[in-house]
Image (cartoon, rainbow, N blue to C red):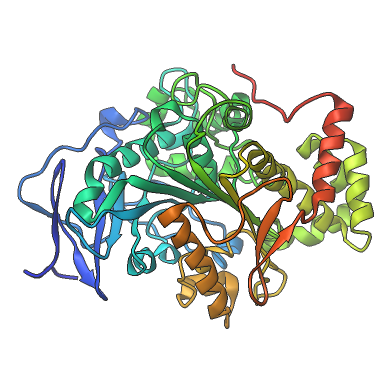
Length: 501
């Protein structure tokens, strides 16, 4: 795509950028918000980019962070473009009205991908529909995997989270020139992006950078530091190098990615193997984010919208035939799920009683889904009544076996369901009305903090987006929540806090 004299030009603190007019929307892609994180900046906190003279072209997506590809089984359902280059700390802006004075609400999108994959270039995340409806949309690339979340004795932790804070600082300083209001910023993310949002809510350095937050299928969490260290140590053993940032920085980047993919094969949410995560570091994240939000005063002035899909676990179990294998394991799989979820036998028996017709895989999947997502989000909403809105996505995919699985709601939130990439999960014939309803709710939340249904209170209102018109249910499936609360009381413990080591 070539630039023309009529293409929009906007100034940023580091230099001017030229975007493109596309269907009445001004689009700017690949704008650097930090310097390339390689060379002497490898495994270090982000620093501002070098200013440039003249006008920088912003017509194409910038480089994506280094990442291994999805396995063949997952690549059937999830798109993940790779764009080579070192300048991977970049972002994109869609705006209907570039230039100061418009003061439009802003939505900043953090992609998912287990903190190891994904990028802002995934076609489902096209922000033009938000701009079409009066919201400036910003999507962000950040460091992934060992580059962003490796834990080393000679480098600061949470480089990827620091990248996200740097991107939000860029939005604060630059977005007015693109037509946005820096006082009306919503940060939103799905899966690992939502986990990142939870950490940003609890991070003192992110205070004041956003007014609202959306957590889609991801809850605030910080894994035990040893779990992350095991990933680094196993990679180091395969590469035959010390487990230090200095040694990893000297290693071949392609070999790092291969080693990361090999040691991360058991890192799925269900299996719970060693994985990269945002850790409590005493610096950018001084305490466990869920506890800081539930028991502390962190982000009390931020409006929240959060939710899950009804069958999250089906994206984790259906590809590769894991659903059938878990069913065959029977009681062994249930015992593993109990250990994975740190719950007593009473919770497992309660789930079997509530769903007597469910197979083992469905029970295991729902246990893990509730442990990782629904229960902590439920706790967060309980701690923030009046300023929290909760939803459930319940429309089942037209593809066999997926149900209302993890990530299926994205094509509806972005109103991008007509794209081939959205159809990888939804199949053909996804309902247009559902996209209108969900996308409209996200637009309203970015505008005012009210997506169109009652805020969380003692009646537990949940907006259900499924077949037919959306409706508000009260106290849905609270029986499961009661099981977990009773188990906590019996065992005399709260949700596990990561050890600080």
